Image 1: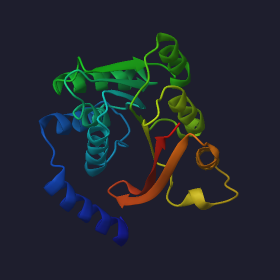
Image 2: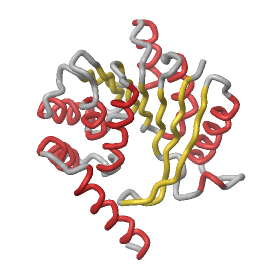
Image 3: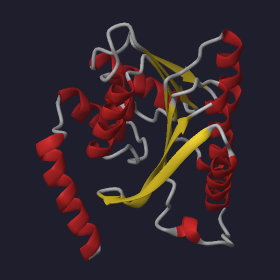
Length: 224
């Protein structure tokens, strides 16, 4: 671990201990995800708390998450919903989805959250056909090469005022490379350029450092 990363991690731990302390359900969700062999790429606790606060501030009642993993971020999101709120989360891997369902049930969110399995680009059209939207809040944290498509789908399933958050958009600073030799960076830059052109979105992005290294998030509001 570099000196910078060690410092970022120490600060994350300090902030998390004070402002986003773990509880049994969150701790168990991470532990069971690791035990099941899922990659350790869940959001950091303070990032989970940020998502929670954004959902609460938005007054969201209907949330769509693209990329469930083991349900850690899903717990943070769902806990911010009112009693009659609902969250749909899309997960490609059946193994990941099963772990997430167990984690959500243990957190008391089994009736609030629906985990749908399959490629998101297949399940998103089904949501549209079912009239599942509009969603008030979107969290996109799945396969990065499809982020331009996921943002497009968020617009389709949104309403004016909906909020869209996309994780992992700085990629250790590589997003600034104008000629990347990496399909993920290329797709991320395409997403940014699309958002910048889209008159229905008002957006910003920011860099983050911490236990998860150097990355960032995009936050966009649907304005029309």
